[in-house]
Image (cartoon, rainbow, N blue to C red; front, side, top):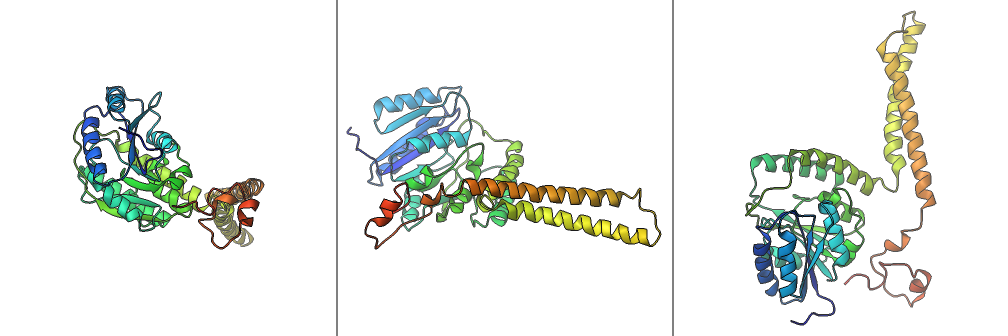
Length: 334
């Protein structure tokens, strides 16, 4: 089977201990992709599995030249697996899906069609979701809070089934567990994000890799990604704002106590005095941290200016000559 110079579609599948699922995933995926009539490649990323997941994927590589395997040294997490898969992907469109058979490969044409309406990322919305209530309810809460905090209007941020343009994944900083909020990171970089309902199935084999601690970490990750997308370039607005609030509350508390002191009341051992002093000190410190962060950003200003432009038209070449480092200039988007 001849391999094209560059496939039109890349499918990235992170896998951890999915020996019981990976064969069925491959069979269903190839069947779904063949109906698209596009050239494609399949990238399995083995995230340090301790079973035969990597061996089965390697067997696919021998039989099908469209299949590739990236095997990580140990379990680094889904974000690291996706990052390695994105770096190796060659297709103009990139699809991600989980290897537990809960994502249905037959939904990929629907994602691709939505992507070609002008979106840069299309996220699946598992509807209806086939998971236990103990997993569904916390997930709904996290998704609601994420919509409220980030302004990205998606129902399901962490659905594994997503479609991207290649320039989006090339520009995506993934580490830790930020894969949960990829749509927020993408939207924060000025890309257009959409959503479609996708079929969801109960887990076919094996067990879920996520426990209750996943939801606790999810809230912390949400705070991180909100800061990175909304206040990354203006930390003084967050830290200085909170600091100003604390400083104001401390001044009000100590002003009230000062008034009592003038009226002859003793205030030396009142807890409110110590709270007021603490609020003033913390407020000043937060404002100073915000100013230091602003100075660091000022020193780094300009390094990412070439990545701000989506497209240009009507120029005669001087723009490209003056900004050769730009990766998002004319012709950057298919």
